[in-house]
Length: 79
Image (cartoon, rainbow, N blue to C red; front, top):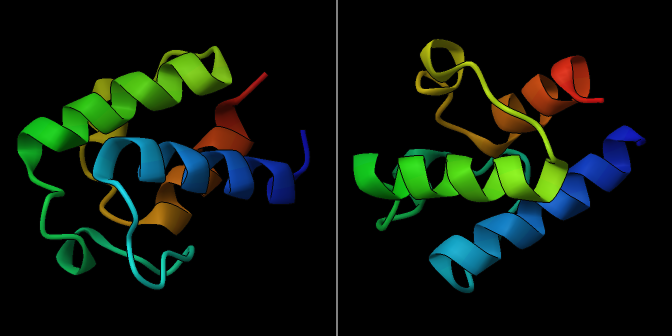
């Protein structure tokens, strides 16, 4: 999967979890999405695991607080 494909799938997953987010890009962070709290972070991770058919390392992914960090993680660790 290309990085661009990962970006699009990740952004789609964000929209599924948080609804429409104005200006959603790779630079979007948790500070930009009011609903991105600790509970929704866990839900987001679960949805990303389903979307990409992979398991995330909880201790690594819990610290990532922006779209680019998640995309980079998937690109580096995905199948």
